[in-house]
Image (tube, rainbow, N blue to C red):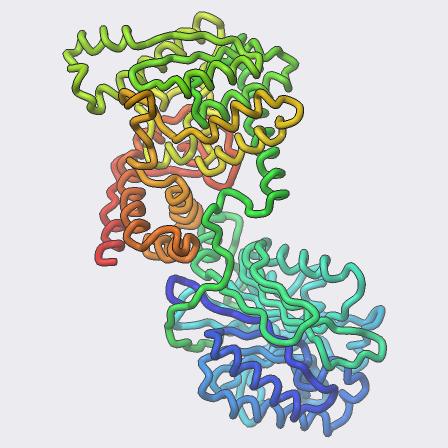
Length: 637
């Protein structure tokens, strides 16, 4: 529960139709198993205390009495469990029968939620036995306890702000206007669905899309528990298809098996997203009854997937699709800019590194979309004090293979003259020594663009912008930055994607791309040592895979530093020790705050993913904001 994470489960007990005593034992046994696994919210199937397939036996008093006695047994057997559970059973109120979810905690019934939409088509005949649910704030007595009965009841955890639960039952989700819409609008961040959905060919995929889609639409966690083994197979088979989703992502799934499906819902993540989305309106809260409950705060052991590369899909097919989509989006943005400005050329400083390689690849696609020759791309290589033969040769080879117009401008003498003018000692390899070269390169590019009637294409990526790893008015500046919202970890995969795609049709191009991928990331602003790169970026600012991880969770989801560190420990496992993760996380926050002034005046560039730092897009931050509160949270860890 700490850090906004709570362990939840969908459970499918093995039952016997109409054997309420046996079913009660199976249910409380499953509840105890869930408790031992740290589960704090458990959703069980529709009518699981009797069996969904009892048919006309629902009219029989022995079955209804047995269900209530079974519930009493469960309440007594689970008094000591700090676990909220929702189970399904028929409930008689007055002279009508309802298909209900009973929500209980530590032997107390928190509320009874009747099903709203009763299917009466195909294999379903629920209106034969049950009445539709209704709104009510009147108290109702069940198992000797007074509790709330109605569709307008929410359950709120007082010890975990943000955790509010709502309940709907099976067909409710399939309806045109599911109850979960109003429940989420009234504040529910977690929806429980007690279901008895029979299995037929193709239904599982549809069910999966419904659950994931509803969790996305409502920005909520969604736990779906399906009936399974033990239900009557007279005309149907139930597969226990249990699903746990969060804001559109499927966290866990289980089918054709009884037992527990477990994962963790990040409540803080959902609350943040709802706060951020101005179109998510909280409404109708006043017409809902909210029942409070307490859960003891504990540290939730994580089992849910947390990728160490959140910007890069793990699946190879998804990754290839993502790469193709990003290249097209970025190229379309540049295509529009070239058309609008009437630019005759696109000028790129080609260093032989990853970023400029990606930029020229995107520019090549844009030129192709415009039916213009690749020779309209002017690739400028500008060797200076730190340039190695490897990167220079790769830049020349890449430009040649792409058909770009290559210009070589050795800036060494111009930089020496400039240093002499300002009194900079050539032996003093300080920030002036480095930035003087970067600014000279930008001046060269801008002037060549003027000469040729073109625009300068920026090569800096999202990770560099986050860390401020760019020379102000040097490589920081361009006329259109095609890489501006592409993080470094994704830059590598994009170049790798093109490398693989060209392996057979253009092997020479693929070969040079492979060598660029194998080259250490470096600005090459310090003199080479024995012909080798002397300045490796990740030795100075930290591993980009860590900074991209930190960027994603700190900016996209607004997580506090302690939670970012905890997730990093979980995601990277033994790859980095805690001290290393903490060192670079502190460095991330220090640089992110200190370097905002560079992001406040970024050139235009296309947004391609969920995170961008453009001051005209997703990120607005004062340039003189202080990082003290964020760094203080990491002290003593």
